[in-house]
Image 1 (cartoon, rainbow, N blue to C red):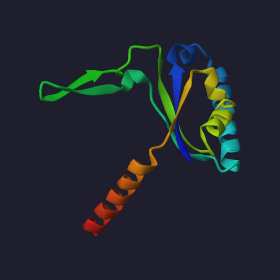
Image 2: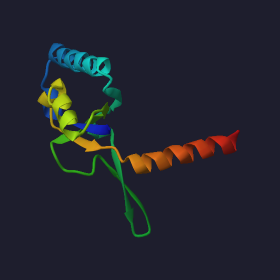
Image 3: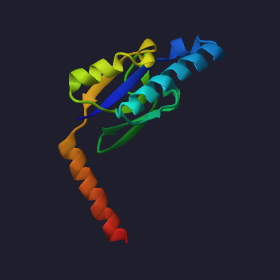
Image 4: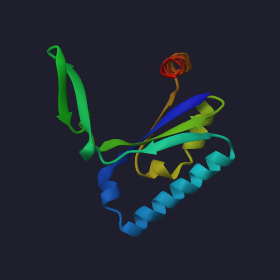
Length: 132
């Protein structure tokens, strides 16, 4: 099963670290990601820039409202996404509970929606055929 792991970051914790502490934390995270790779569990991921660089879109009065920053008013902001292969949710929890990134904020783990993702793959394939 595929899982999407949303890593949240308390930006004040990150900003309070020295450059050396930040580099050490990233090295720990990368080393654990390598362990996940060796086990065939790491499918990919993306780190995100600061929430200060985000915008949020909302439908409003028949149009779209664009607001600076993230939607949620919280000190923990989405910091990155990790795609994980695991047997089931308990296995995903076991794998991610060892990730050093948990020290910087919580991880939310959700099963990927295989049915909708299959529809997306089919749509992408059909789109590519049309453009050929």
